[in-house]
Length: 180
Image (cartoon, rainbow, N blue to C red; front, side):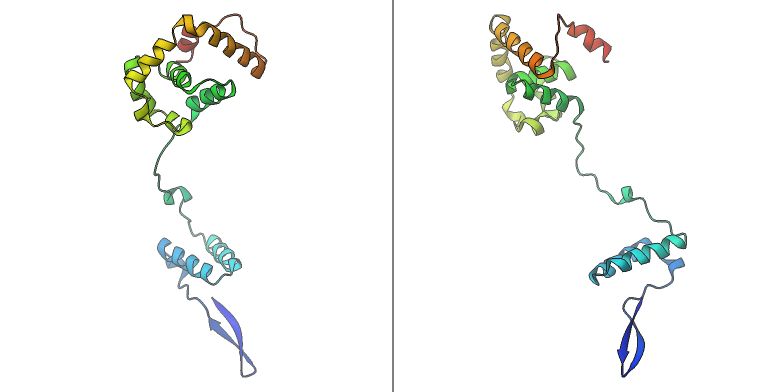
């Protein structure tokens, strides 16, 4: 790549970057050239360089090949249920139980293991170490029907107000079987 410079009343070419033979260009050399063009602070030169490469049939590598995967999160079911629970003011303890029982029914003994593997610690900002088996058992004492009837009524009213949904009854076992 050259630029024009005036020297002693004459226009001369000055090499600003040597690219070499395009037909022998390697990917590492292409990246090095792009880096040097960025340092020149002339974005139009990068576009021109890529246009020349494209017109000669240069095969650019897939952008995916340059990505490095650090962590993978699945936000599907857990996030959807968490958002519903958040919208209807469901307390965090009940939220964890409801999400577990709907997404991956397991024993209460395994609840803390499931919670640790789910995306909920990320959403709830509650470390898995805080959800122990004894905490689960204490919460179960609270979640007995005699104590939860008022809560169930309140949750139904919140769901009805939030989503405009009227429901006579739901058979969760049929629902769970139909989603598997």
